[in-house]
Each structure stands twice: as C-alpha cells, then as structure tokens.
Image (cartoon, rainbow, N blue to C red; front, side):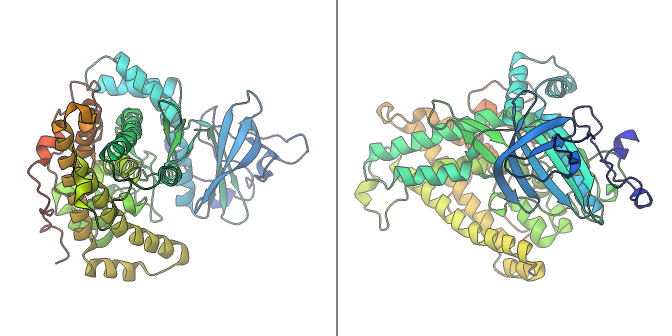
Length: 512
C-alpha cells in the first residue's frame, strides 16, 4: 500500500542512483526538501552545531544549543527562521532497516498526536464517534491540552550516509521545561530536612500533592487519546518536562516517543509479526507484537508484568491473564502513576533514623512517614537494577547472566511486594486524610491518592479496564468529568482488601 511504502527505505539496487534521496513521511509538512543554503552547502549535509543553519524538509532552522543526548543520537534547540517558532531537532542515526522504520514511526506519532489543529481534532472526534457520542466541550479542551503537552512534527529529513547508515532528523515544536527528575533533585536540596513539626510535614505533603495533581490533570487527558492508538512505553520523570514551577500552576509536557508502539500491532497475536501494513515499532527481526519486542523504558517504572516478560518470557506471561492484560494495555498507566507518586514522595523529607515516636503525633503524620519510607524501599530496590541494565546495554554485557541473577534473587516477586507496600501506604494515607480534622488542611487531597491507586499496580489486579477508560477513571477520581463509558470504580474501596503484610500472589508466574 502507499501507506506502507512511505516507511520503507530505498531497496539496495537503487542506493547508488538515489544515494542522497530522502525518505519522507509522506505529508507536505514533513516533506524533505532539496536545494542549498546560502553558504552553498547541500541542505541535507549540514552538521548540527550551535549557530548552524540547516534545512529539514521545507523548514529552515538555526540551531541554538544541545538539549540532550542518548543512545539514539542528540536533540538540539533551534528556531524556525520563517516565523521564529521554538523548535527541537532530534537526530537519529540508523544502522539497520528496523532502526530507520522506528525513527520514521516516531515522526508519524508526533504528527498524529502533537498536531495543534486538524490531527488532534480528527483524533478526538473519531474517539467520540467510536463511543457513539458527539464530541463534548471537555473533549475539545482535552485535544487542546494534547497539542500543548506533546511536541508536534514540523518537518522530517531522511538521508542515507555512508554504507547502510541512515540519518533521520525530526524537527518538532519545542515543549518548554526541565526534566521532572532534575526539578525534584533541585527542589529537595532547597527544601532540606524535616524539622520535626507536624504542620511542616503536612505542608510538604500539600506542596508535593499540588504538583502531582497537576501532572495527572494535565497529562491524563492526553494519555486518554494516545492510549486508543499507541503506548508510549517510556513514561518516567526524565521524559516529562515541567515548566513554571514557581507559578500557581506548573505546566507539564511529555517527550520522547522513541520506544512507542502502535496499540493494534502491539496487542496482535504472535503470527502478526511484520505482515501488517500498519506502521509501528519493529524489532530487528521484524516483530511488532508484545510477544517478541524488547521490554522498553526505564525499569524503575516497570509494572510487575514487564519484569515477568523480561525475565521469563511471553509464554509465562500469557499463562497469567491479569498480568498479560496489564502488559498489553496498562504499561503507561502504571508508569505515570509511579511518576506522580515520586513527585509526592521526593518532595517529602526522609524521616530521621531512629525516629522519635513523639514526632509521629498529629493527624496523618505516621502515614506520611510510612509512605515516604515505602517509596525509599522501592527506589532502593529498583535503582541498582536500572544501573545494571543500563551498563549491560551500553557495554555489551551478558543479558543471560543478568536475568539469571535476577531470577535467583526473585526480583519479580520482590518488586511485586514493594509495589504492594506502596499501595497499602497510599490506602492508609488516603484514609488518614479523610479522617483528619478540618484544621489539618489535608482532607481535600484524599482523592489524589485514590487516583494513584487506580494507576499503580502490584500485579494482582483483575479489573480488565483498558487504557482510555482507565484514564477517564483517573480524571473522575480527581474531580473531573468522566464520559459515560468510564468504568467508575472506586480505587480506595478496591484496595482495602490489601493489608500491609499481604504480598501479591505469584503462583502463575513465580520463578519457584
């Protein structure tokens, strides 16, 4: 099909005669342009460096400074010389056909989700039509928020370099802000230690809850639309940007769709591998379903199902339907929930060790400290694993040895227990806030903890609520208006059956 052709590089027999011919995304906005710059250098050969002028498709940009680097390449800040718009340029070097297809798929998603006009409107109207409803004013507001929170593709340029190496440049609207993890580190240094006063600790809880609430209120509607079409698979505190943190309402954005997958392809059967004309992320062997694609993203934000898939494989995961459903549909839910909880926990001070019992007096003080310690235990469990996974990836270590060590340590069981502890701590704090006297000033944040219980999983859920409906449940829990298709469950009531000493059942997927 014509749609499939735009994702394919030129066949080998045409490489010489079309050596510098760009592969495009097939739209006017993303068409790769020819021509030359004022200095006479071919547009496609300009190196990205501070002050450089480069053509990306029909867009002439001046590069300002580097925003970040990664295994994919680099991202640069730039200005569109036509209208002065602030842009980001992502350069991706591709050594295989799969790498090239994945880079182009990322551009496809940026065009689909980040479009401020027709694309976002069409997406929202189609979702409403699918539910048999007319688009509401709330949905139109969400589409506007979607356009603000996610970068939109402006232009794409794809060039073959020497040999089989391709270079893809994606010019996109720039989302302002600093990475959320950097903001949290800076904020923690400024806030300092807890002085032991109950009122001071509750104030820190209120401040962190304010930032976490805005994170969910702003990004949940965007994810509601995204989840009907794709999974991001790399939601974490580094890929979420925060701006205006000194203003009444901080502004959040979501970046880096480099590991995203098309939801329909991802959820297909294993035989669907590379036979579909629908664009999605593909593995080096052409696989495009959850069975065979690598587990993506930062393992500190993985749900239990991702650990089972990573350590035991898809047949073991498929043997446990609740976990399999979670992995296929709810990865982003869990990751954003953990990110929001991270905001709350890391804006709280660590309780002193040993803790003076007199410091626990006062409404919800014990529960606040319990949540902070539960987060610390979780983070200390997953952070060394993250370090080792990154080291193995970058330095060519043995994945088999890493997995063997994790299985011997029962890591998937340990992570499940840490997540159970977090959920129990959230439930207890939710109840404590509801029961606190009015003068404590924390009664109105209980709904935030209910929303987090909807998002964060310990691998023991059986609700079967897919992405879009669950995102609407989150909005409902935070006081927003949910559509009539919302499942409407109460997270706090559902979680009460868990006690602090209860671990998630693991019989269907335990390593023994």
